[in-house]
Amino acid sequence: MPKVAPNRAFFLDIDGTLLTLAATPAGVTADGGLKQTLGRLRTATGGAIALISGRQIGEVDRLFAPLRLPTAGQHGIERRDGSGVVHRHAAPSCRFGEIKNRLAPLVARHPGKMVVEIIPIGSDKGSTIAEFMSESPFRGRIPVFLGDDVTDEYGFSVVNAMDGHSIKVRPGRSATRRLARFSMTSTARRFWRRPMSSLTNAWCAVVTKRCFIWYIYALAAIGRMAEARELFEKLLACRNRHGLLAEDIDPRTREQWGNFVQTYSMVGLINAAIRLSIRWDQAF
Figure 1 (tube, helix red, strand yellow):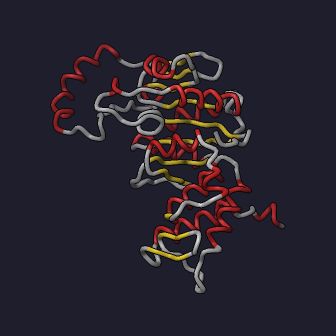
Figure 2 (tube, rainbow, N blue to C red; figure 1 turned 60 degrees about the horizontal axis):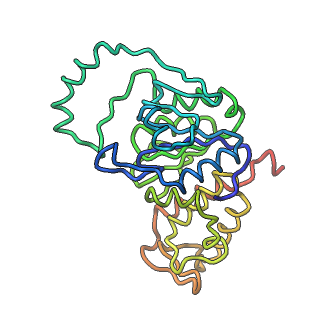
């Protein structure tokens, strides 16, 4: 696991982020390596790590047993805080059967992204993260949220408003700022489980610049600023005589391949520079 800055608080979506989506919710599993990594992250942060899910807390506990982490279930309808106390929002359970029957035809016509979720009014992943951040051991830390889906946008917005870091797993539009991205769930998991010395000490045979910029951004998000700046300088050293970069780079020869100039890459480069810049009050 990469070294983690001690003042971070981590909030992790489960399905599609930590775990690859399956044909049914019951078809996913959490392997021992992932559980071990989450346990180490809990130790490294002094317990400031929470799982944020649409699943019930009981399902989450069964998936990650024997771990029992702070957890928000059903988009925050139920929440286990850092001290182990479970909080529940009241819901009119007597009407669930009626609602289920009325929604059945809609669900059949609109399968969505592996699942159709009913989101409660007044509780979402953003409000849930805000509740965690008002309590120990999360209070006073910089929040970092990893998510992948539409319901995670609420969490991204709240985390960004707290000047934290949003990391989206998988491509797709997002309304949030300060956003790093991973292309798939396995990449997000490798980010926690490997030291990534292969990227720090010896570049890949061909670097896709956008992915490399996202990696730099993610390093900054967990407080590894020195490494992020070092890699950013290496990337800038590959510019041509006009100061431009193509979509792909061979780091051994600095030969530039692919689209030139690539708009998304240049925007990512500018955003990375902003993230790595020293604040005015620190520089002067």
